[in-house]
Image (cartoon, rainbow, N blue to C red; front, side, top):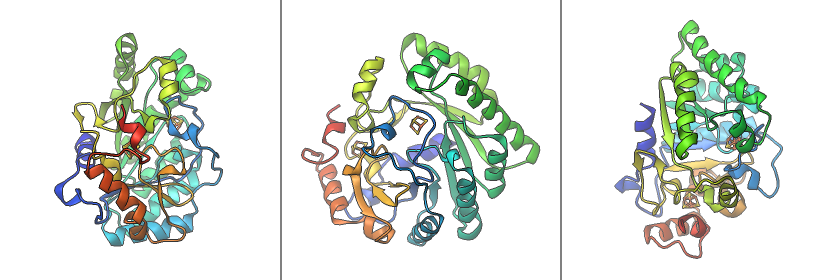
Length: 315
Ligand code: SF4
Ligand code: SF4
């Protein structure tokens, strides 16, 4: 079950309750830093300079080889952007991970609107283990308000979700298909439940709910405008919320931007959370860089005042 995997990553095991750490089990790597949506709660829109270049395949291969050698077992071929913006690169990355590296588990989260059937099938053929759809708007109106783009894409996304299911059945591929949705309040939740039951549940193996993250406090203002209240820090999924401190994001999961920067935070919006540069350092050097070790020490003391995480935890 995908929720068991998420719960395993969002729980910090005793061996990882230290400032200097062995390699994380899981790393997310940004194939493309671009996205065709403009979600109000996404950290992507808060980057000072919008990156334009997708991940360099040579860099991807080098760092994932280092990760595998260090003991990483799971690679997410996404981080903040939408990886189907660069479908060729995405397929190449999955093929390399599953073919040459023998990475045990490769997963992807997508907004589905760009996940056209041919690209999805190539990912499945390449051996993608898990494909998860983010479904976060209950209707066209909410979609335009939250995702900030034309409602046409709202429908395209559901068509693609259905196609992916059909492609998998037809081709007999092993890729797990999942979906998650943000748990809004009241009326919106009811509408959402109905939509999920009709357009998502029949086409995925499992659907689950997420709390509305504070996204490192950056998206808070926007959320307040939208009338949704974020939850503290990054506490995992509803049904299995974690204590905000120490935050698992800095201990059990690596995050690499398309530019090759290692980030402490799964919602990193700016350079503030950069802990290393993989274009210049090895993965393990960056994972235990002096800055990263210091941040983890603050988390372990349960006092992150004066660090980049201060605002996030204030919730
Ligand atoms: S939350 Fe996902 S779909 Fe929305 S803008 Fe961010 S990356 Fe794109
Ligand atoms: S800002 Fe810090 S505490 Fe908040 S989610 Fe990111 S790493 Fe965790």
